[in-house]
Length: 358
Picture 1: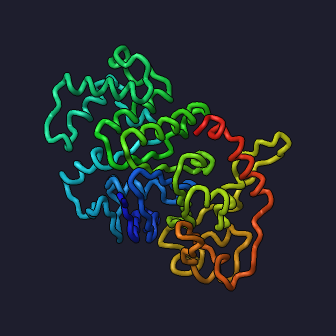
Picture 2: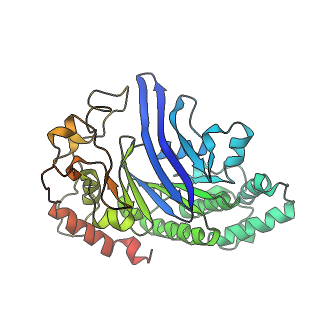
Picture 3: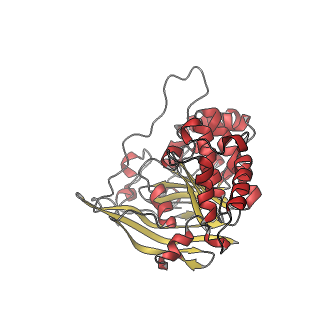
């Protein structure tokens, strides 16, 4: 069952330098119980996309076009109280830094209870006793030891990984249908990253929620996502099942992301980087929509047509699509980089996420 459907979403920002097109004609779906990873470099539009789902865009942002259907209801038509009821009960978000989500002057038990007692879906206000009991259950569920004893502590008394668990507990208080995780492991060490990802997978099974996982690191989602959408310059340039993206990537940008994963070979002397920088999305600049592929200046496999026309999404399979002219039947055959194949196999087989059983 399709839980979320985004159709032709375009979001822009009014800045001092001009109009910035952060998201351009974006479309995707999210199924019930599915984990979809949005992957791409900083500035590719991942977070703006998800903040649009939450209706949490700043005042200088505008949704220029598109539709967002949640269980068949277009959430872009909601106003005021309806939007407030959407957040938490329908869609909830775990942000990158837990300290920006927690009130440093408020005990963690009270913070979670506050979310519980204003849950619009309950249609009633929970009593203090009911909210406290549920809060202790949530703290135990996310792996906080001795929840009774830690209920009255402040955020600074917890480690970074524990604070992220507390944030997740607060988000889960209202049993959201969709959970957005915006780079929730970036501020944590590698071991804690594996534990938080494992926790999110376990909780997803328990509460039957759909997850959108935002990250710039393909390696983080190797064994987490059901599907992966690779974003570049405000658009999805490749989308498919996780195994399709990792074992049969078709877009040169996806090749670059996979090739830039850290090598576990001790003899490796350097880390591969994609040449150049993402394009500016102001106004838009010459060479971008509607003319030319924005990735062309960084693409070593670029064809002449890449500088003239932006490619559509070509069908690779029923579940796999990529926006590259290399998939056009008239294009010359191109072999994927040999280093990419080695790096991809090595990372999938020996990464800490695989060894952690994720």
